[in-house]
Image 1: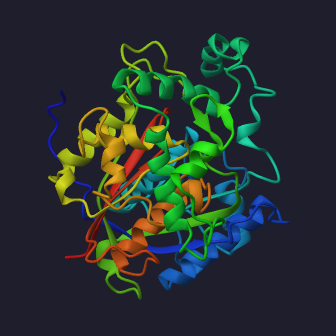
Image 2: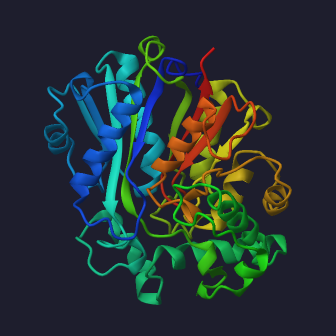
Length: 388
């Protein structure tokens, strides 16, 4: 157990702007154009101009470099630019990087962004067709030859163990899918707007990698999302109520691999999420009971359950009932299952809307939101709160 005291980041920076493109299956334009549209929309929302920006953060997987985005957006000099690794696990970490830069005085206004044509271009769900040699890639040599070629197949191993350990059936995962699609059905920005599902629909959907069915797997999306971060004092002068970054964390567990961490002692948990949870609770001084809404990374339904358990909202094996009872509002935008798969960045935007009080599925009086990003890989998380 770490003996570190609370960090000094909390309360020093805030999210002041959010912007996105439409979420589609065929954007018809380049990933750079998607990035620029999202960044400009976020700056417009913040009441800021490109000239105000002096920092950019994105994912190592993004194809639009910070310098190129700055040029295309009309942004001038940059004093800070950074990238975070590990796919969806990077989302909240990009905001952490931005907040750290602002708190340290390295930059004043930092924009985080992610843009891709993940449906019409490179499809993550299509499997590993070509991989450059790397130390990280060696670990996949223990999985690929046996047919574990896609993220769904990797997660299915842990999901099967979870069901076995707690005596559950795949219906446990259905509650997550139904909840996400219920919220997406009332969200005009969601790809599955107007299309809720039932547990029967979930059970009838085809197998992808047993015990995962089609409706346990997030969709594939073309689109872009951007987030604007600045200091709290400046945030108070801007048009929208700031979503204060109360806490931010990254985490990697022992024996961590890229979604194939099968050699841990227990496959029913997500140790990397536990690392993030402990940091967030310690540095914020908050507990699960203090959270009003949870925006949990839902690339696959089983890991939503595991996250709830790792964060202490319920005990091991109890999360399906927790979700079914609507104990905590989760993924009120529809999540990646229902709104869009943007590597978790659209979830951060939803948390900001909840804090502002402008969400389509608004939680009354929402003052604190938990956001997570990436599971099965090194991951990250945020707690956002209302100012004051």
